[in-house]
Amino acid sequence: MTVARVGLVVHGGRSEAAEAARVVRAWCEEHTVPCTDIDVWHEGERRSSHEEVEAAGHPDLIVTLGGDGTFLRGARLAAQNDALVLGVDLGRVGFLTEVPAAGVRAALDAVREERLAIDSRMLLTLRASRRLEVPADMEEWMKYGRGPLLPPPQVRPDCEVDDEWGIPLNVTALNDIVLEKLARDRQVSVGVYIAGRLLASYSADALLVATPTGSTAYSFAAGGPVVSPRADALVFTPVAPHMAFDRSVVTAPDEPVGLRVLERSGPAAVSIDGQLRGVLGPGDWIGVYAAPRRLRAVRLGRMDFYGRLRERMNLTDAPAAVADGSPAPLWSVTSPPPGDLAHLTSLTTEDRPSRPL
Image (tube, rainbow, N blue to C red; front, side):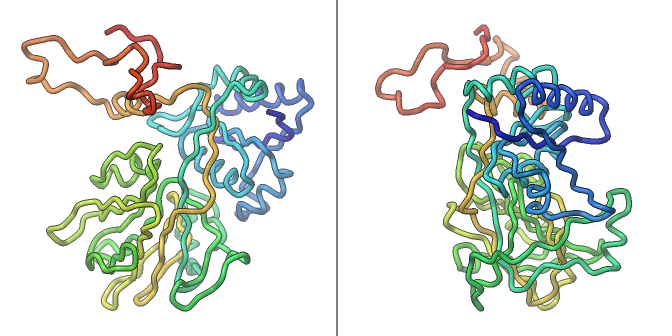
């Protein structure tokens, strides 16, 4: 593909990220491709994703240099501009980044020469009963150790505002949208609706809606299921609920999840991919939906999601399972699937690393 302009999102706290950024800039100079650092800071304040992308000249490839947090920043920008995003792995426990720092030049060559696959990931968006805002006193408190917060989400001008469906906000989430308590000693009370019908009213530390990509993030830590990133679904997970039913619910992509703050609830914070974006009170609500757009991430080979799950989560075999025999092989098949299973692309052996049985 023709790479017309590259945007760089760099984790400023890591020397290896700065070194990888120099490699990217040198590659861009060699190929006469404009390269712009996308800086979320502007005169001490945060800019919206639209402003960041506009300032960078609307790049068609965004390269992130850091861990999953840096990738999430890049994904927000890429989704805004319908650009490709390439994640360079400088993190510790990440699932999102694609290539090691040592391979960044080869990865850029592969993109330019079209030796790549596009990994299409589901995104979330939301509507709300009112615009999201963070109280000024709380914003000052939240700045501690983090820098300024993102600005409040803007209303989408291309969508209708409706009394029942609420205000459409310009929000994109790759991992999750969370409604959580603000006071340690007071949980949030929330009515949870799925596909327009009340599921239950919860009193909990938080209620979250995740994508399959985000199922290995906060949702996983709260006891939610691991969902293949290739799936399309919404994963609702309560966090420390005061009720017997504490299970996650996985819905179809056209079954949105609504969260309404109840009368006796404490205030609730709305976080999007870990970023505080607003505070709600009793009577307020948000609706979480599958977004019409998707993230387009660069893949240079088949992603071994389950192998990475085993490695990153330090999964080990049950002693009882291997006490009297050999451990299970890492790969169960090495040949192409038979004709009746040829439609199952996940079973093809193409691009798999070579592993002995």
